[in-house]
Picture (spheres, rainbow, N blue to C red):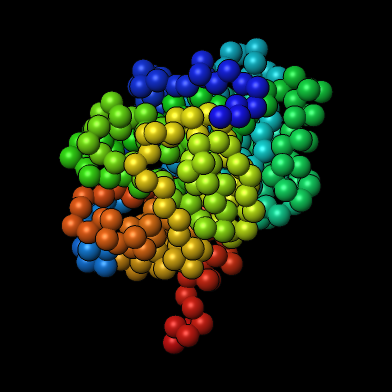
Length: 331
Ligand SMILES: *Cc1c(COP(=O)(O)O)cnc(C)c1O
């Protein structure tokens, strides 16, 4: 595998890191609820548990990683600040954690990022810089900023502290429900899926971890299938799943450990968002409904089984909220 020159073996977090993250997160975040809904079960033909990361203070699971990262930095490192690049929830997570730990934070967002995402980042007290026409351009800018200011550059994918922090969500799921047949995890950079594989392997080896990505942005899916990091067109409208490349550290952690990696269309994700809204009183963003979309779309794989789907986030834009109701239903 092309590891981009990094010796990432040394960087893989362990279950002990996840447990340590849980201890420190206990002072910041309550465990999130996990519920089943009879109407969701009926439509899915399976026993579905929804893990509600949409209830986090930034509306997404990523805050677990951001807080873990900032709390592991020294006071001196925090003084120099952090810089990262993101279209949305990773940005909010790092901005939120920087506020909690009093570190200056700069987030570089591609010009395509939603106005509402920028506003939320600024509301947590971070500096948002909108530049470039892609996440790759934003990453280059962030790298230069880090070199000039001494701020810590935070990769949204290749950062072990983020994976350890995110792993606490899978501890919560599997300690409460060790009998699960499968957990379905939406994938962008792959930190969530990597953390799920790490925790499941040790706590519930019989529980499959299944990834899902949009067929319009299949870079992580294709990297996993190919066993090497690949770049792919990045055309999904679903922000949390939008990536044009595989990330080395999470790909290494899901290689051979993920049971299956499914693709769904953006339309199938919209259907799942509707079901969450009507049957589970949950307003999910697209990525937050992708796991349920996989269960509905690939129904045979899940029929009659006990499956957890992670509702990873709730940061839908106004446009995404209005697309929940097709015009034919405006009656
Ligand atoms: C980031 C994100 C994902 C994807 O998580 P990765 O760890 O990047 O794979 C899924 N859903 C939401 C809501 C996200 O913000």
